[in-house]
Image (tube, rainbow, N blue to C red):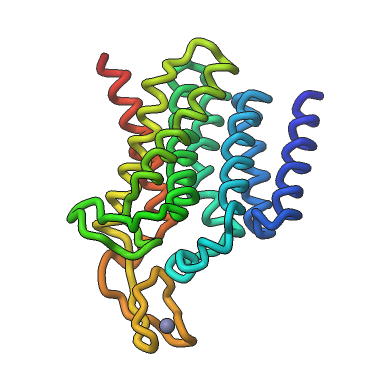
Length: 258
Ligand SMILES: [Zn+2]
């Protein structure tokens, strides 16, 4: 009976996400399955955490959209999340939930929270950080770069990143009481730093030979762009997925070694 309620809630939530254009159709289908897996493992508490991530991120991305146009010019995808973006953020939490379903333990639960905290931290950082009045600096060279450049950080974005991790930490703490709030939030924040770092050193970047802009898009001004740095397969989704994976695995080893 409970399972049926979760199916209905997850369906309504993802359908709503599609209605308000936060998700594409493929994104909504992927989000439905991610939500379903998470409800198997962590029931309504898991759905609340997932909802906290999804709703807050969608709200931030709609915030002062007109100011983000120069950033949208650079990044590969728009505001509406497709299935690849959803899975990049959701597949690790979904798998951990399934593992938890078959063998519940506090470690799996905490890794689940770290994964969502990392995803949330990174999303808040990019959505809020893109509104920074100060131009971003490149994380490895500290040189000023254009807005929307992967690997660029701002003070506002860093604060947003910490707040994003802490937000999931606090929601989880309210739900479970026995989690290490600071530790989990730290690992979430750490995931977002890894994200920026991989974005700086490995992410594919292209140049448009018509207008000269540096972009993550493979096409610009109706022409194919030329890759100027990074690995071809390393797009933003891959960077997201890798950073969430790294934060989660690191949490596993750090807590296991204690
Ligand atoms: Zn162009």
